[in-house]
Image 1 (cartoon, rainbow, N blue to C red):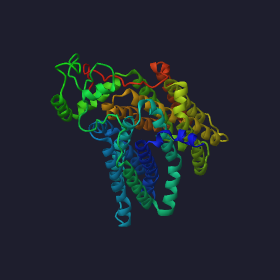
Image 2 (cartoon, rainbow, N blue to C red):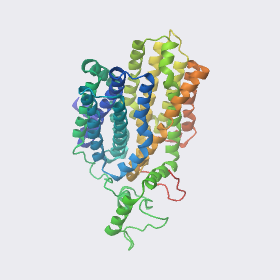
Image 3 (tube, helix red, strand yellow):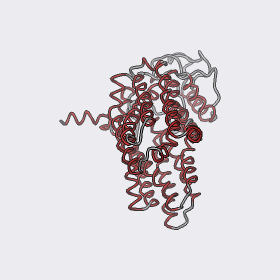
Image 4 (cartoon, one colour):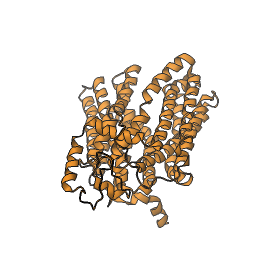
Length: 478
């Protein structure tokens, strides 16, 4: 029995990963509480209009479009653990201003907008940092297990966080609930203090954005990283007279620190462009996100006005459907290992499209049950993509590019969300609510061919070595 428990605990028995897991779990719960409590401050305390509430949601999401790519550069330049601690402490201070202003009776809507923007910016830094630090504390062959553990806690936050947030708002009022959230970020930061990479793992967050010796130690391939060579054929063997010594390495470190932001962002973009696997994955996920957002932007209106569901029924159906997220988090890693990473992504995209079609064909008598089933399918597909897609990206990426490549992936995948929301509103006006849900479902299903016709369909195991970084020739401008 004890051995079985230890086997399930897996990476949670390792101190570094356990610290990261606890910090990320607390941070995710805090984010879910804020996601409910901050709009309620605007709605209940400040009597914001529906337009102002919608604008608040846009302000919360805006940092992900503006700062994700630059954040990737800073994550690669600086120690990731330090950035995560600073992001947590920053969110604690920013969110702590809301209850203080409420108690002093000086809170205003413009303050809530500023808090939402700043908290969102710090969340960008934290999320990119924790995705990039996983390969430093988990071996590549255990990336799926590590991401699965992290996704279990995130799924629990999705299911339980809004309920906890609603309870805190009901008992303490919305501003005081945000104070509890601010303190949760302090707890997350405390767990991150002392976090260190596993023995033998690279630690590249010290200003040197691509030491050739570190790259050579990690990969058997003789070709140099482009971060350490200015032209093809310029590398020499470690034993040659022209081998770079400490002075040359120091010069490269200084040069790396002086490179412009555009150049470093471009390095992540070039790597992404050079990988057929990453491009196919992002093409599919961006298509899914675009279709989802077309539907989600008008889903509540459709459920209330055409399906006749009450808010209580909608909340219950969404909560029960969220159990698919939990199931996916618990089994997504095993699914990918059993059937293959590429097939898992194809199954996930298919489940997501089917989940939207169920909503499109719902009637007043079946809407409640189909909404639950839709949530189960969508949640499971969502976790299959998160665990296996993120693990694939981390496994393909050299350690000195983890921040920028993870940032590039998120930026590409999420850039379609605002236009999808706008298009959903336009389509609902022109062709009706049900037709808009159906159009969104068809677009989600269109994400499947991106995967099925790409090399991903034959990919079973994660790569054991990162891909070589893209050459400097043919640079694309960010």
